[in-house]
Structures are given as C-alpha cells and as structure tokens.
Image 1 (cartoon, rainbow, N blue to C red):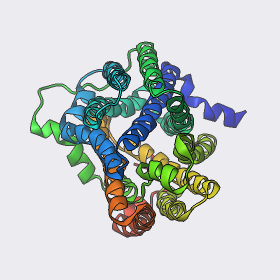
Image 2: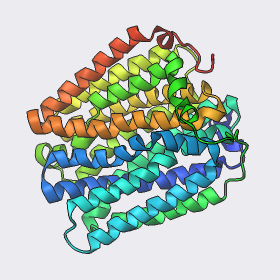
Image 3: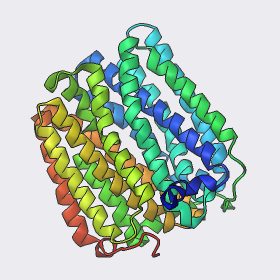
Image 4: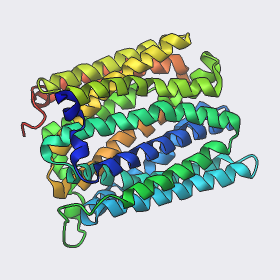
Length: 407
C-alpha cells in the first residue's frame, strides 16, 4: 500500500488529474500527427533530407522565440497560455487535414503548417513544464515528473501505432483524430483551478528576457544536465531515420514504422513505472551519466540491426536508458530553479531539447544522405557515448550529486 500511495501522491493535489488528462490527449495528438507527417513527406519525396526539414520546421520557432516564450510563462497565468496554445495546435492540425483533403499536398505547405505548430509548442512547453511546480508541493515534484514523463511515453507508445494504422486506413484519419484530441486537451485545461504562481512584474527588458540564460550559465549543475542531453541526443538520436529503416532496410511499411516509433517509449514507460514506485534517492548524477552512455550503445545496436525484433529491442532499451536521464534532468531543473524563473529556464531547456531532437533529426537526415543510414546511426551512437564520458569529467559537481533536491 505504501508503494501505491507513493505512486499516486501527485494526484492528491487539486488539478493534477486534469493536467494528467491534458497530457495524455496532447501526447497522443502530437505523436499521431508526427508519425503521419513524416510518412506523408517521405512518401511524397523519398528524400531523407526532407525528414530533417520536418524537424527543423518545428525547432526554428522555439529557437527564434526563446527570449519571449519563457518571459510570457513567467508574466502571465500558465494555465491560460497552455489553453491558447492547444487551440492553435488544433488549428494547425485542421490545416494539415484540409491540405491532405485537397489531393496531393505540396511539401512546402506541410512545412509551413508544421512551423505554425512549432510556434504554438514553443509557448506551450515552457508553461507546461513550469506549471508542475505550481500544481504539487515540492516534496511531490519528483513523483509528478515521473508520472508526467511516463504519461508522455505512454502516449508515445500507442500514438505512433495509432498514427500508422490511421494513416494506412485513410490519410485524413490521423489529422482528424489529432484535431479532436487537441480540443479535448483544451477542455481539460479549463478544469484546472487557479494556481499560486509568482508572477513577474514590470516591463520586458533585455535583463529580464535573458535571465534564464544567465541563471543556467551560472548554475553549473543545471548547465551540465541540460547540455548533456543536448549533445547526446543531437548525436545519438535515430528517430528521424525510422521511416528509412521501415521502408528500405526492414521493409515493414507504415504499421511497422509505428511499432518502431513506439519501441523507445515502451522501454521508457516500463522504466518510468519503476521510477514512480522507486524514485532515485542516491547517486543520481552517476546514474544519469551511465544512462546516457547506455542510450548511445543501444543506438549503435539498432543501427546495425537488420531484423525487426532486434531493432525493436534495441530501441526499447535505448528508450529506457533515456527515461532515466530525462527523469533526473527534469527533476534537477525544477528543484534547482526559483518559480519566478521557471518559465524562462524551461524555455531555454526546450530550445536545447528541440536542438537535440529536431536539429538532431536534421543532422541524422543529412548524415544518412551523405554516408547512408546505417553509418549515420553508428557514428551518432558512438558520439553519445563519448559525450557522456567528456561531460562526466567536465561537470564533476553534477556527477557527484546524490539526491536531486540537495540544492
């Protein structure tokens, strides 16, 4: 009973259940739309570089708006920001639905709509991450983060499979479902009560806009945790190449692509459930570095695999290792950052995440076009292992952290 009570601790806080429902709906919608856009673009062009452009279209808005998005999350109610962003995402999904319905869509128009979606997520993500500390007490924050991360991964397990099945049934289906889920998520947000939040007063100046950058640079633990994830996933991420593997190497079609996309999340959610019940209470820094190295090693195994079961297993193990890293990093960022700075710090963190994911996807696509997908995956995985070793020596304070709340 104690373990069950510990696992459900965050749900005792008012509004967390509705926030949880919002995460589920949004996670499903994002994953369904992402796998459908990737398959549609590659089906139109058969060029892996275009898969990189899909990721770049999502990342550039977050990069260009980073000084604004975090400040908005610290100056205005985060619940309202999340609701507005979900409505914009629903409008973007409606645009993809309409574009697909017209017949053969032009890939440039898809990139434009994905950019609108990326701009909405640029405001959504800092507010979504920062609001967790307003929803639950400090001692329940690691539990809430573990639940949230597991929830996102649960959606990532089923979302890509659903997206592949829906797209296989009809190209319009995944976008219609995404619209409905974004709107449902917005309804959940309406049910979240008014929350205590340290609202930053005063006008926007360069000093206030850049406060997130300055705080991260001055706090070497937070800087090390964020930059470790940036470079490890930037080099080791192979998600963007999954359509190439599904079509050209493993020959498993759109349904197989959904299975491959779900595999990392399957491993992540299993590890996430363990972390919900048994959170990391000692040697957090060293465990995070070991997890990053394992992520890179399993990426190499996936890159070299030519059979579906081994590819799925390697991706699942890589996802489990990544879950440990995400859990420790997210907990450190939230616990070591004052509430009045959380929006701006999380905005910078989202740029780093976007750089590691979307720019990493662009890097993977370019590498695959130049040296082939297998070589690109092997080089990237080995690079992630090397980053873990270099960062272990460069940020000794981060490596020596035992408890995540020891700040």
